[in-house]
Image: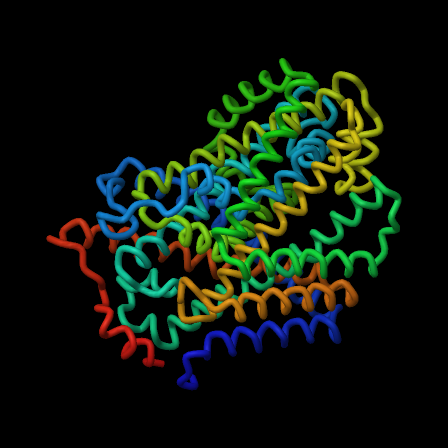
Length: 513
């Protein structure tokens, strides 16, 4: 490998461009390869996804109640940079904000019509639909983010190592994190991040265009989709350019305020009693069946539903984990391990439960109890319409729909903003304050990739590739848990805090290839 401080950036950029060009000129072949690989991993290693993801959850809960909970992510004198409210807002916006708005109505409805077992459109199907929705968006995904975010924050701020995924493995491979092994890990992290953000940018443009078309009659054409991509790119690169304090922080606070506002309106003017009954009942069934759902895979028979939903979600969260975890680590300096886990694992999960109980519970009430066939037709026709058709059941539906569309846009901007920042960090040797030029460069590159893929029809291919890439990252995360535990164990026996690498030695080690 060529000795260069830009080698991770250059190699990851080349691989990304080759993949995109291959998708443009050999789209069918690439689609077959990525889809085949994804199918193989879920068919033969689906059990591994289930066991690994449950293990991540158990690991984080054990850390929460362990003797390491009082350790601070930084020096003992460090304190959090951001207020608790702003911190919650940023990690929630980066983690899954846009997904909650998009799937809040759609997923419970889809599971109600086609449940994992039993007959659809029944009372049992309503309970099953909500339980599995809670399961897919509950503790497991946030445990995945917690593992990477906590590992990065500990080694960055407690051990003064660079802000790269490879730094987490110092207890296992030592200074080789600066060599080919470490750089390979960092390249994989960048590629996974690029694929995830580029796919979401394209799909986000499709969702927003659908909403604009439904509300205002604007044609849903590829030209309008490209215009929306350009507008979104200008917004999230502008936010990344001006920095977290003036960009991401403000937008995230706006996100939370808008989300709480629209959710409160639905609770007040909607089926209030039904919402709280759904929340209470589903939380009970979720915790009662947590272990069963976590390991549910048929030894004999058809596992297509599990592959299409549970395994798909677990792979998707893992594919997104490098950049979401890195961003969470970036804004979490000064917090204790216990505080970090409570904030990243427990609080967002509870907020997610309330969200789905409000939107999904209300939607099921309209369909199952009141017989609203229009909402069923919308879900069957196009899930991107589900939220907007759902809001037509409330007073002032147009203003509510505009707020929901705004929320999708702002949630998307904050997710893309955090992803662009992390890409710049990963490609700047872990510098937690990368240059603005590099952030803008990544933003423009992601937009161009999304536009090319929209023209070539390769978005589904890229989505499959990003999910398939989660398989090797699942293995990496398994070793990451052991490395973090080893680092924490060593930290506890030290007399005083010290860096693995003194600052004066950093330059020398960074030159190692």
